[in-house]
Length: 448
View 1 (cartoon, helix red, strand yellow):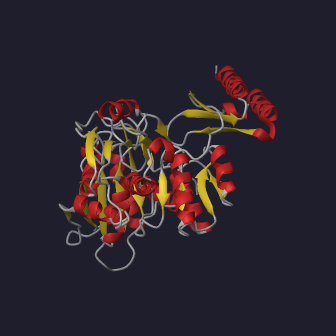
View 2 (cartoon, one colour; view 1 turned 120 degrees about the horizontal axis):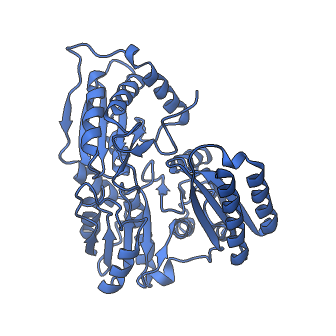
View 3 (tube, helix red, strand yellow; view 1 turned 135 degrees about the horizontal axis):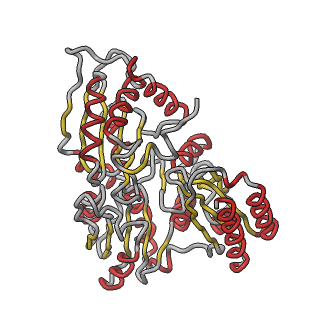
């Protein structure tokens, strides 16, 4: 079976336009409910969301679908994606649902599903759910007396806050650290400042006034310029940027310089190796991670295992290889000792533990390798298969030949938007730029 609705991270698109409509959400809930109705116990579903306006449309539609299938729905309100994964397991739920388009603007939204184990669903399960959606009229709905109920879990933020704090070493405190945290006007706008303050930090919180429209707008992990300026203005020790659903993290040092996910993984991997905590002899990352990270890990006698883009694929490889550190350059950091998916707050606390122990400025602590020059260019396209054209294939081959064994080329379609991503990296920055431009021009020519 193949998937048409699900991409690399659930279903995503423009709100109130297919597939992100109330009708599709209703059918999805009914199909997922049928897929996860197993046994005679009273089934339950956990639903959370970020702060987008369209969440008010999608949550009731999903709730109606699950209730119609005889499942009780526990609504959590605005909560980070990793909190949904955690509470799905904690509440012994049969399914978890997060309504979010992550780092995308408010116009977009999406639906992510978690199984009872707190892990995102496999491609195979998603394909089965799609097949059920196509035959929704035949779904076994509950009888009038077996309908589900819906309730609000009022203490959800407190439960997640305590779980996150337990990941921080008991012997350490954040006393004396001034931290600027940018919550992107998103799902962590309450819990992130609270966690840092309760652990002793002086907290300057920005991006904490969501209005349904401003999520990720000129803020958060994908737009850290305001955070960079604020760290300098506040004379803070560091800044932390989360995205709209708080499953990714970007660090800013005291000089306002960005530290990306590759450097964060390197720092945690080295620290855990020194403490005999790293499992699997490797770190799992995607094809986008810098060659500099791979070379740094090799110096520690560790491997870098690469996966397709998407934290779900990172998690799957981590589980298969027995690894407990993985992530993406974009800031999704998965630490399986503490959770089943990327968690910006838990990653931040593990990073802060290293910084506190080092007792040095973040600029001297958090950069362990020099990244190779890497260039990424995104090209929008309107259908067709430009990557299958001979001219484009020749340009890609030419780039690979030019870079040789001192670099690499990666071309892929985005799994969440109509974009082709062109990436090249190598030791010669000028050559990397020429390779990307040549491939981009070839794609643009055939697209016309």
